Image (cartoon, rainbow, N blue to C red; front, side, top):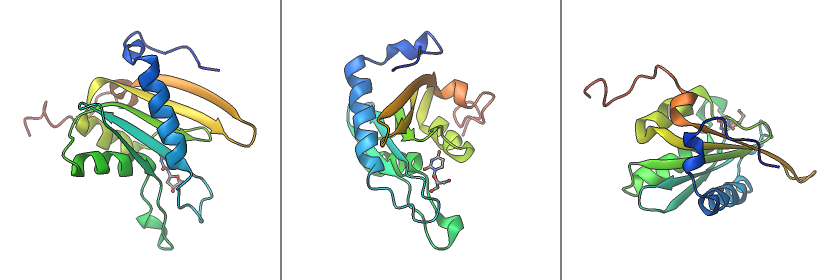
Length: 149
Ligand code: THU
C-alpha cells in the first residue's frame, strides 16, 4: 500500500505517471546484472518530453566498476538528448538512491522533482512506496547552476 507523501510538492506527480514509472522500473529490475551482490535494482526516469528511460544495476567481476540503476537510466536519457528529469523511480528491497546517484540526480533535476522509492519484494508481492523530492534527497547540494558553472 502507498505510503503518505512526505511533502506537499510530492503530490504533483499524476497517478498515471507514477504508475507508469513504477511499472517501468519493475520491468527494468528484471534485467539487473547483479551476480555479485544479488541485489537487483531497477530505475526509471520521466523526462521533460514525457519519455521514460529505464536502467538496472550492472556489476562486474572488478567490483568497483558496478554502476547503479539510477545512473544507467539517467545516462540513457541524457545520451538521448534529454537533460531534464521530472521524476525518478527506484525499485529494490529497501530502495533508496546512493549518495553518488543523488549528486547525479541533482545535476539534471529541479529540487522539487519527484523521487519515488519502491521497497519491492516480488516473491511476497509486497511493496511500500515512498515519495520525496530531489532537494530533500540531497540538501545543501553542490548545484551547478547556483555555482555559475
Ligand atoms: N545499487 C543501485 O543500483 N542503486 C542504488 O542506489 C544503490 C545500489 C546497486 C549497486 C550494486 O550493484 C548493488 O546495488 C549493491 O550495492
